[in-house]
Image (cartoon, rainbow, N blue to C red; front, side, top):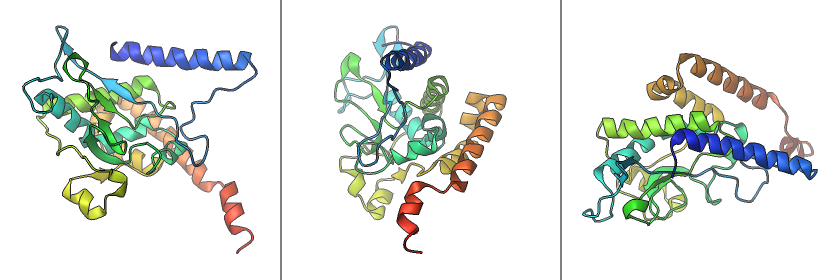
Length: 244
């Protein structure tokens, strides 16, 4: 276990070292979220644990599932702010080609102990190893910004005594719209512009990043989306050119 700041430092160092070693071998190491169609993308699952005087405050042995009220509130905060968080944790157009059903990436704003389609997973280990895993981030994100908004979202759940819906036990990829509504499950944004719009509505994200960073970040992401939408991609030519 380490602090959020040290974790971000370690992630940045790791990526730099991997790229350098690859270049020395005449290779390129990519942290692109979905470099290859049809197979699982590259995720950056983040495991979080809160300690107070070396005690894991996500753990409650007296609870049926071993989770404390604080853990539930933290989970609720992540779920509540998930759509806006994705603009920071999944910052590329390509990021949303990883977040699709059937490829072990989350698509549903839900939590579970087992289901890979859920945004938050609680690994089965309990006691001092109790932790909360958020599964949507990918390695293209800025780890300092991503960890800042994730932690503040969870803390917001604690500060405001939020509670999550019951955990899902069924494959969320196969749930109907009606089932999702019954279980209070929404979907993550399906593209970058949806995520940006959600983040721009979020006071928590704006306050976490600060006015200046928020302005520059979202201007850059809007420009990136605009450039993408104006391009004609090879898939379009392959699919349409000989038909229309």
